[in-house]
Image 1 (cartoon, rainbow, N blue to C red):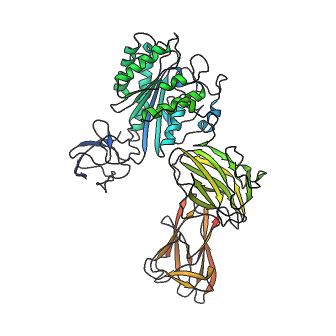
Image 2: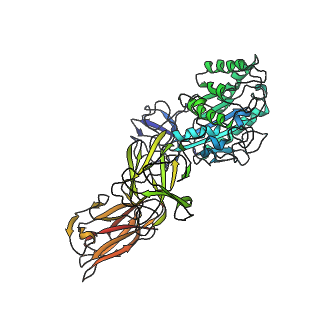
Image 3: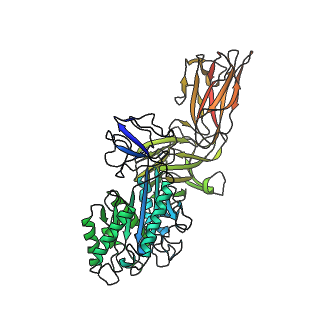
Length: 592
């Protein structure tokens, strides 16, 4: 862990020495991402009491906002511990007892989560969470098990568009609490897992607030001494692994080995009522079992989702509301044009082409002649979508609506054609949305659906002013940024019959281009032209000359391939070219 640095905050001014790699150029608002930990374990970024002595780590990534915070964290890091009996570590999703299997609950849950990490005790590393890879947490089974961590991860990801979730887990089936309390080998292993997770995060300058889920009680939970042993267990967990702001969630299934679930649950509820930082998962009584004591896959998903809700002060969703066969496309899912959740308007003569064409995602598309009323729609649960498509001569401009409001446009038209194009929506609110994709009034070609993905919100959206492959713009396009004394001049030797030109020092024009692609700059050459420089994101990528003593119209320069991102293109005079004119005539975006 980095050496702590003492700060004194006085009227938002740092008065104590600080490490050089801490950026505090803006002390009144702090630098986004700067994490400060107070002695009581709470976190803040601004609005700290004058004279407060704080502990600061350089280069942190995440912060949980504590009480008294005057700033808002830029992203969230969370550490969840899971312990208890067999329902905490789960069973194989392939087991024949499972009905339905996990894949029927939601296919997106079997994927590799991109911002959720599970501690692998064997390698002492955090790995991206994935069923059958690292969802085990017991000492008596293999990897092919999952417990509440999958549902928790799904709910966390849907609620947090940035940051990371880290999970550690240790559970042993069939054990009474006397075999799990402090002083036993099982408790020692539980603490070791937590310590490994904490140290791995501290090595990254991360100190997230920890939370804990305890699933135990079917074995011995109804015994008279259970309440006292449980209270001691939670006190030890709090002292060894949590802090005063951590939340503990307890749950017990609807059966016990002695057949008295009421007493087991009463004992847990009695403890929860005595601890303001504890919560009780009441909905476990509704979870279906696949044998006498073990949850179905759908129950495990609901359990994890509700543990997240309880930790974060939200109301639980009863199991009866869990959709087993999903009608919505969820975060992480990628679907093709044939997915049953995509609805094509009934008035169009939609056709299917599925001949393995490499220009199409998955080898197929659905298409129709563009006209008013043509559209396809689909329901999602998540904050962002990505549409995959190819572009062709018979394509055209399209628009996307979320919940009835236009959120962006893209075009599928290009004279040259190109596969593998993508459009990414702005980040929407977390939750459910109805998406409609339709041709605009200017679309006179074919309209098609190829591929849809639901993203977690961390992907960059396609800016509304970004140019896509196939677009050709003239000097009057509103997406061009001009800087300098640009003026318009008509002329027959110009693309489109006109240009913008400027002679002032530092004059340039800029535009945003979606990659991968190339930009083709159209221009004329003249005696008052000169050497121009083209930059991408501030880095020079080429030069071209607009100078010729005789003059000639309809010249062009094509850039190198731009990367798969949103590229800020700038054109200006090259160094040493003198007081020559900067012209804008035409730009075309070509396939990579």
